[in-house]
Length: 225
Ligand code: 9D3
Image 1 (cartoon, rainbow, N blue to C red):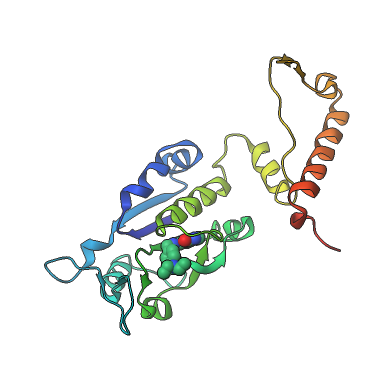
Image 2: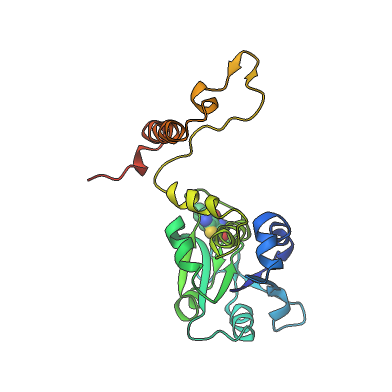
């Protein structure tokens, strides 16, 4: 998969590419991420990328020409998904992540300021994605989230195959508690069942803990019949 990112702040996104599963996916050439500075596609000598909104009001709007030029320079094919990260987009879920992970080419457009010219949305953008109901300063952190989540579900991105399966299982249930040594820490003991070596009882305990936590903390995740 290739992901091209168009942004005024490529450096914000870069660090997330350098660690963990994402870094390994890039090393193994399962994923290529190219960061593109929007300002390089401005068409005037001041490299202007924003302008005042027609109709007035506070804040600036990203001009259409540099974004169109940047997208065209990336040679999108008919199968390329051109994704605008915006608070008005469809909420990102693990299901969306898995669907997007099957694509071969994504172009991510990160907004800044008040937003982008509407003609970018109507003519170029194929998908609009939000990462949740809170206000960020721009699309870069959302792009990091999306790239990180996609990298984890690419085939062979994980060393530990079991982890991936446990992750997909945990879409419906929250995680169970985890313990490691020592068996007693500040008067708190590891539950006996985890020390028993009885694999079936351990699985049952973990499942029960997951269900109880989910009901208590995230009842919205329990599917209504
Ligand atoms: C005019 C101020 N805003 C009304 C609340 C609009 C606004 C536009 C752009 C607010 C924030 C932003 C910057 N955010 C993103 O670009 C963004 C985002 C987010 O803020 N929350 C969740 N997902 C995303 S994806 C991109």
